[in-house]
Amino acid sequence: KHQPFLIPRPNRPKVFVMGGTLLAPKGRQPSSSNVWPLQMSPDFTGFPYTPKNHTVKYKANSMFGAGESVALGGGLIETFAFGGDAPDVEVGGDDAHVPAPLVPFTLTDMVGISSAAFASKFIGLGSGILSMGLDPMLKVWPVMESGHA
Image 1 (cartoon, one colour):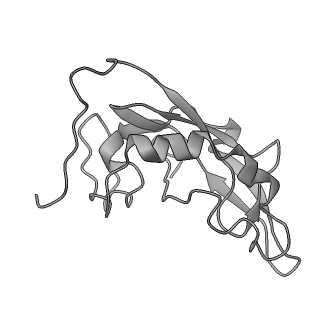
Image 2 (image 1 turned 90 degrees about the vertical axis):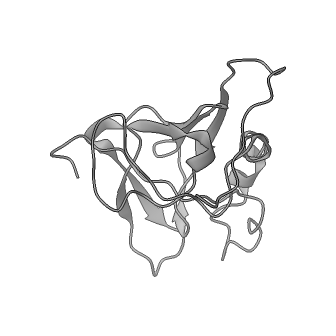
């Protein structure tokens, strides 16, 4: 109720979709087999496709960490709410309620994500200090079909 609310300007294109790429969770290495496409537009943003078996595998950035399989994709969310926490309760259908993020996801975020390909070259180098601040970080969560949660 007391969150900033943004609406598209009326004189802008009605539909456009920008592309980005989910590289890897913090502390994990992206590879050609685990990066995932992100679609961003003024109305909906997210990962409309699911990977085979609903998960991708990531190796740890250091020899002391363990790899992990992560569930990805499966749906879109209204753009202003992208990057916030997952719903408290798993729900299905078109009317899921999610907590508002601290700040709304905006065109500026989309441009930054779509222009951050260079950051992938620095992720996984040493402790990640080189990539700190270069790679946009957001909370993402999967939209799972029943039986895959």
